[in-house]
Image (tube, rainbow, N blue to C red; front, top):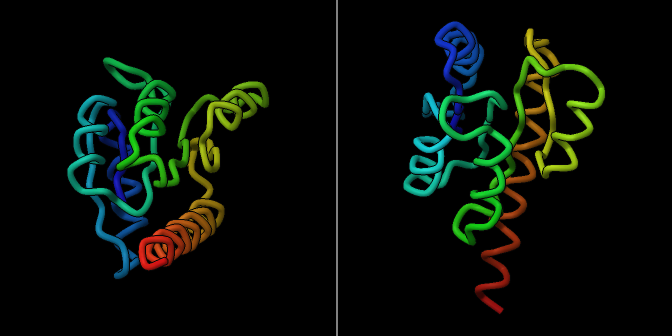
Amino acid sequence: MLYVEDNPANLMLVEDLVARRTDIRLLSARDGNRGIEIARASLPDVILMDINLPGISGVRALRILAEDPATAHIPVVALSANAIPRDIEKGLEAGFFRYLTKPIKVNEFMETLDVALRFAHAELARAAREEQA
């Protein structure tokens, strides 16, 4: 999993939450451009993306990843302090798999990770079947 986040406190919190899961290895990037580079190089199962990042926004990074055939299949979950309903609606319209708000609600966060990982694994299995056909 890749987490694109510029705030060290938020990154530490997610690191602590993910440390509970032995099935997840966490990579991180502090800005959208670096996040895109890491996503293209490591092809994570899931990406967590802050919206307000230095350089390019999380929404712009999402669009770039969605346009790249190598990364288009990766579910990208927004994790943002932008929590008003219109922000959430705009995020989902932009193509985020799910939109979580800060402060993080631990149960919702962990459930969303499970859903995103199941989706990612199903997509990989589907792609493998298509290659064999």
